[in-house]
Image (cartoon, rainbow, N blue to C red):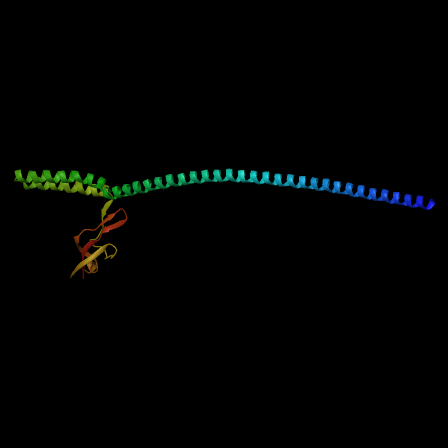
Length: 211
């Protein structure tokens, strides 16, 4: 009888221990499940946060793209305007250059026209007058007037008579014998006068050299 009680107590004790083990296992599973749920929630929050950051970056990139496109369009517009302005400037300067070349002698020729007027008046006077002296005086006046015009335009005559031959100024077209030793190798006659324009030779003198 006593032995049966002891066996019953042992069974009861073991049942209690098993019950505790089951409870412990149940509690452990619940705690593990709760822990897993908490971890899943954290991961879900992290994923959501990353998605929000990514969307924000996409929005920023879209705004930057729009700004860059607007800036590019502005630069292209400025380039087209500058290109058109430069093309107009090139055409305008080309026309001005052509006009300058075309009318460069306008001032000089305008000053020469009065000399032509004087020649025409002299020709008319020669037809109606038999006085050679008067005609000569008129031609001398015209010649002096034209010489003054050339001088005012920067043109001056190249000296030649009795000067040594200078190939930079003179073109020798002939040689003639001379008795004066001082004239040998020098210019004794000018076939055609030469001229400077300021300091530049614009026409060489054609001369005859003594030998």
